Length: 250
Image 1 (cartoon, helix red, strand yellow):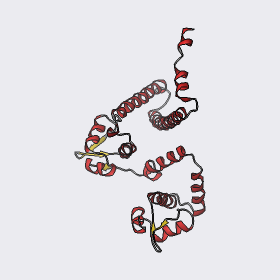
Image 2: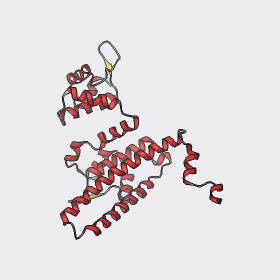
Image 3: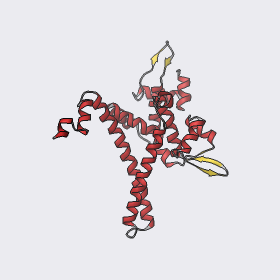
Image 4: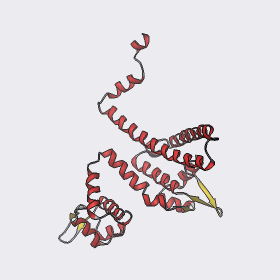
């Protein structure tokens, strides 16, 4: 893409982009002529990141350089996790109330099709409230809708043979687990804590569990890659969980 399109996609003036390049915050583009250059989606992502660090966190250029340098030392899995959180859980978005009114507006904001929005709502994966007869979708709904579209792009969609109903089973399992843990916690502390304290600790517990489940998913993926790459091997992994016939006889 040319500089004009880059300016449009990032909302950053041309002069500022050139300044970022001179300072080493953004890689130099590939020259396509004496006075023209070609920019890539990677330039868009980097410029938006620098813009966020400047506009939201008010960081000076030297500090931004340190952050970018440190990010280059991350492993691919840690970099993917950082990109994921930067994309879906931006601090400013968490502070601001983001609501989408109407199914058409929600599909436009997420890219999710009409059929799968209806299915996800039926399964309780996406839940909306009603206001003046119109569906209102929360920030969390917006995140899960975009995640669904990204999953499909990565090859985890119906056209690739992935059964989306797996998401319903996962969501049902997590909901049942969290509700069960909440009930047990309330049962043990009902007389000891006030209602406000119970609500506060319950909310914190839900957030902690989301972080724990995220950790489990990341480490499960890492263990899966190790098992298939020869470190222990698939056979060893199976034998750890299932005794051999000779051992079973003993």
